[in-house]
Image (cartoon, rainbow, N blue to C red; front, side):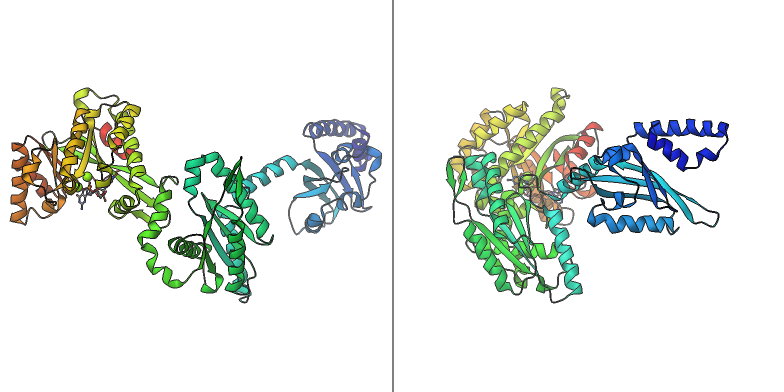
Length: 589
Ligand code: C2E
Ligand code: MG
Ligand code: MG
């Protein structure tokens, strides 16, 4: 035991006890002291009658002092507590001693000899007279600086963007929330959001690589921070999107001036290695006047205004107007988002089983693209495929689908015998089909996934085939040489010339679901289906009916000799894990 601990014993009145008790207590104290040393805690013992505190050597040492450098006043402790924590500590001690709170435990910062602050946790217990008056108060002090700094780091990381070290979306939304609360209380205070999206950033990434792309984002965020007053928040929302929360704005005009400053910041080049790169940004501004309830609403409106700025020629800023909301579904907005959908991991492939009518099991799957847009939810391929065609993004999308689907089917077929292997059907749009690099891309993906090309089936619509029949024949022949199957999708809806049909090296006709839809009630459609099935048999082609939704349709198609079917009646398009489950169960319908 140290001297101070001995003194503490005396302090506790040990000298008035019997020798036996004294020894017992001394042993106990010894153990206690050892435990304290082991746990690295400092001790204090406060005599409330004399207002003197006995600090253990360890207590003093933790603050960087020798035994004789700290006296026995409460001031030695309390005067070192961080000014921001002082009142809280004092109030907590008082509340406990007065009996308002039942225990004393508090974390606070205290100044070390070196003038740095340490985080300490103090715990204490009071000895009270029978009427509850505290006469002494003793406890421990634990250094929790490391845990505190880990906690602070974790909180910091959760609220900041790792690349640029500026606030992230979560922190921005939180600060907007505070601004909204403030505005409710003081309606005269206004704020604004600027939503910034870099123009053609994808190009930087593609031509200079991701490392330079990241570097550019860092440089831009540094310039933004220099331009924006420190009381405002510059945040990175992800990708090439930034946003700024401007506090205490008098008018929209003020914001436009700042937006102009931001625009100017892009007038100077950025240096990436030894390259000079110019960047520009489109900006949308939303002002708090529009009575927002949630931070997401104002951010969304600023984003809508940004899209408008992009559409109207990029490199400019536009202030949000409520009528932008109505036109927010226009294809141009989607275009920008579609460009990012792959980077943002918003695309997914679903798989719809194709059932063999003979043994009622899965013969393969059709891969169907799904886009989960982060604010609009799931968008149908019918909406975004034509857009992707128009912008040329279909090539990237197509490669992604091909890569993903080939890998997936290779995995599913891995443990299957050759005769049980499943086919995968992939849709190609007309622009993809006329891409001179198509075959090369397909070969690459097949080789990468290592599965047998004969299990890949390409679906092309009749109209795509007929657009340039001559070229189609040569393209189909190349696919045939690779052993890849071809299916004419939505058959019956285009203008296929029957005279051409037999010159195309195709394997399958897929009857369009518009015929299947009301075949049970519409005699004409039933006859069309019968004719297509007969035609397929005569041309030695397989036939699939798509869009089968009822048991009646299933039975009629079977009776007509249709070999394969797909539709909601059997299964909707499902994600890969659900599909894997069906395969595993050897599901039969
Ligand atoms: P599709 O190739 O004719 O695909 C069949 C569509 O019918 C799918 O719509 C599917 O979900 C839907 N369907 C399946 N069974 C039923 C049913 O029983 N009833 C009804 N009402 N519908 C059913 P989805 O997935 O919306 O795809 C629409 C179109 O988008 C596809 O028509 C295809 O042309 C195109 N598409 C989808 N994925 C891709 C892709 O990866 N690349 C290309 N180029 N086009 C794709
Ligand atoms: Mg299809
Ligand atoms: Mg179809």
